[in-house]
Amino acid sequence: MTVTRASVSHRRGTRVDFLESLRGPRAPWEEVVSAAQDAALARQVALTSSVTIREVDLVSGRDRQKTCDVPSAATLTPDVLAEVRRPVSYQGMRNYIGRMALPSVDREAHAGWFESRNEQESYRDLLLTRPITQMTTQPLRLEWPFASGVRTHVPDALYVTVDGVVTLLDVTRRARLDSAEAHAVFVLAQATATALGWRYELRGELSAQHQRNVSFVYAHRHAPPERVPGWVQAARGLPETCTVQHAAAALGQSRPDHGALWHLVATRQLFVDLTAPIRIDSRVQRRPLTRRSSSCQISL
Image (cartoon, rainbow, N blue to C red; front, side):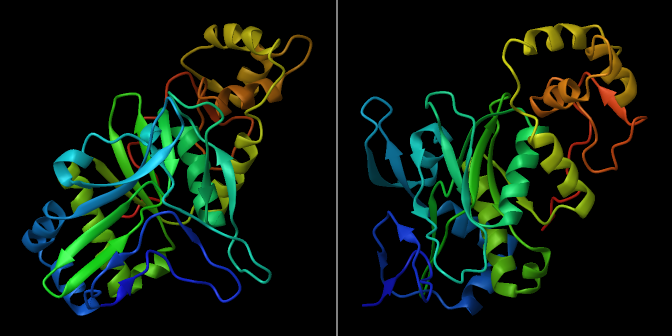
């Protein structure tokens, strides 16, 4: 009997896996890729898959491992899920890891892991552009059964927006989709999310301009609390659409206050296009931009 590890060991350090490893043979990639190429077969694999989580008791704060079928897992939300794995740093590592604050309804001081600069930038972009109420990272393990074995996948994040829509998220490099195995994993993850009644989102790298804008605006999310109410009140007097120059002048007293403007953008009270260069004549809106998809989203 072989043991299927939930993550790959590094030479000088290992990820921490909080779930028990699955026992049994690992399905060959040829079978996985073949299933992903057949929409009906991919849907069948998704419907018969299992979802393993660390369920959090919001009263005691303790968690327990639990395996659900698709109907049971469909009701899960980020606030009841603890991370199923954790990256570990080691000398000489090439990837960039860390933690960042994430929104939650029931948990205070909630944070999640990013396992690359690409993930960090995508999470920041999501928090700036989506009305997210709950979000967690490394939320669950998908277990796909095949005739000759099983394959697993840990998606990068799970989030819920104010309209109640649940989205399962993976972040990758576009070049990775040249691999038939990686493409198959994302196709099956999308099929499983659909079976669960969730959205699935696959994101690639942000453009260089998009990265700069996101980092710049995200850095302004904190401000002196005594000044914020005045900025919010002044923002209500702005027209539906104006320029950066106009908005900064309206938010300032004796001179334009660009810091106030970027704080309101960072906290989703004003909105700008983060994919284009930001200039003094760039458009500022009081309502979210109508673009439904980001330029970094990948269609399978």
